[in-house]
Length: 264
Image 1 (cartoon, helix red, strand yellow):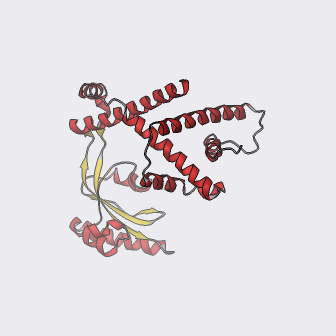
Image 2 (cartoon, rainbow, N blue to C red; image 1 turned 135 degrees about the horizontal axis):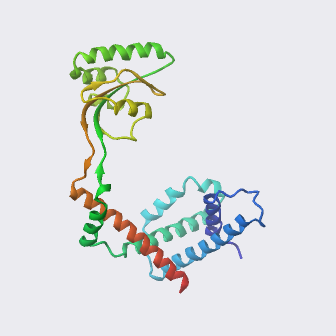
Image 3 (cartoon, rainbow, N blue to C red; image 1 turned 90 degrees about the horizontal axis):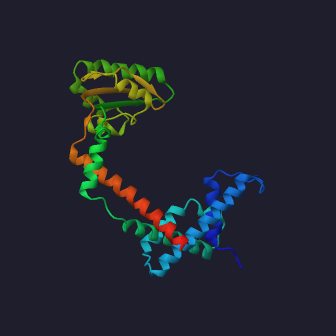
């Protein structure tokens, strides 16, 4: 009797997740842990797919296409026949659809739960400092000194009137923001290159940077306004809390459902 294709796929995927070497000895403790994890995974997948079939789960063609696209990068490496490929795609689709259905059965957090969680964690719902930013980029094509001179010349012209920044960005910038006058909008930390972020968050409102070099080229930043850290509006915070609690309860419900399924 041949081994189902999804057995082979789940074993391969689990081995990758556990970063197992092909030279790993079958006698090693890590290998034994892998075998135990793989056997448990087989039991779970078999039980989940049988549960899907038992309730006559309808698989839409669009859902199959989603699975096929998700597996597209892996399928060429698996060396499967056409029939095996279709079996694997169907199996993975059944898994995903059934587990998604289970999550949708989870009880949703009520208003009292959301409010209570928010009150206990309100200090975490702070909008971080942001800078309303304009950006101008000159890319370097083998002549960094000349481009540096050009960016400093632009900076000199813009310092005479910040309203000129949009015109200069439109004429010279290689950044996609050029068409909008260089506007990046409200920028928080973790968005820009570290060199740019470091400069931007040291600028005062209305201040223009000097030329900043990155691997992309030479940049100018204009900090137009500063928005200091402040609490999120309560309505926005409650929406985030509801989303977080919903996700948590769905995952907990799914884990409980799987435990009951395989112990039945």
